[in-house]
Image (cartoon, rainbow, N blue to C red; front, side, top):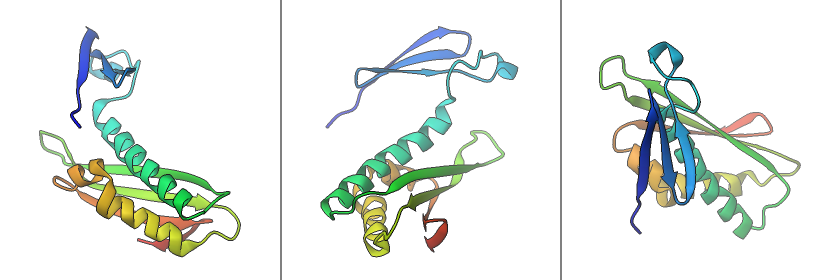
Length: 143
């Protein structure tokens, strides 16, 4: 499966990317000459990571018959100081809440995503340390 994105410059530091039929607007900070009309490109990598892995996790949990839970992810990227400024460490925290959640199934679903299925995670691991944390109802179960 090939991937293709078409990105058009919209002026100053603004760009509009056509991604699988959807527009993604990116822009720079006003202090650097942008208009702040969209996110910066590098944090979008974190969004791609959480979206990719999150889709895996909910699909796997559905197959495991896990229902009625809330789920969100937080990704924090730590950057180098020198140019090119890149994320050297990314910490992804998978946060689950709900009653009587099967911790073993949650850990397995996240592990399958991060170790086998999520292509974005696999690509980013080639250039950064990716740390996985899991919390259930506010308590860390894996780090």
